Amino acid sequence: MSPLPAPDSIEDLEIDLLLEGLFQRYHYDFRHYARASIKRRLVQAREQMGYATLSALQDAMLHDPGMLPRLLGYLTVQVSEMFRDPSYFRALRETVLPHLRTYPSLKVWVAGCSHGEEVYSLAILFREEGLYDRTLFYATDINPEALRIAEAGVYPLDRVRTFTENHQKSGGRSSLSDYYTADYGRAVFDKSLRSRIVFSDHSLVTDAVSSPRCS
Ligand SMILES: C[S@@+](CC[C@H](N)C(=O)[O-])C[C@H]1O[C@@H](n2cnc3c(N)ncnc32)[C@H](O)[C@@H]1O
Image (cartoon, rainbow, N blue to C red; front, side):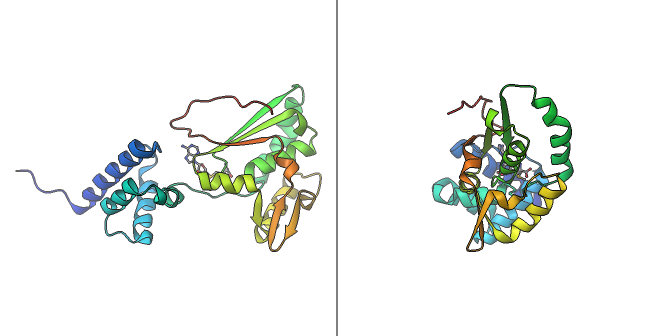
């Protein structure tokens, strides 16, 4: 008889089973994500949600769809900033947009838009460069809670200081404060920035690529 598996490999087996269950039950496919990162996140979810084993977490996941948003919160990384990596936005502004200006209409897809910081940055950049009105922005993610926050376009005011510095470093031609209203510790971004953004649920792993239409 072969020896029993070590506890570590039991945990690996539980991860495989949980990810398979998540896919078959809810069509969220994390089976081929970087293993070490997924393992760390699942162990954190198990500990913080109070389950003794990943099998117990899987049992709850399969029988209670209500806990899915919380689990997705652990499995997806929501790190973002407006004008994150200002040199990238500066290169877009100085090198890419002059070329895009030669096209009569444009489509921009932010795949994995998180809470919307990146797509609002692009909307501001395109507005500053006079390209906003001919562009349709498509902002997609698999995390419904992230999409809800993205559509709202409201961020804690204490994050806006970094957003403002990034915007200036990216060569911003206006003041970021032109695009939001401060309200009880929150920055509420201008609705007009959203008029050409389509937010929708889309998985880069399981969904086909489609083209959004202008409203
Ligand atoms: C680190 S955030 C990136 C945010 C933004 N694009 C940026 O660069 O600042 C990664 C986002 O990808 C999303 N994501 C993860 N797997 C995905 C998938 N299969 N399809 C679409 N989005 C996914 C996560 O929910 C998360 O919102």
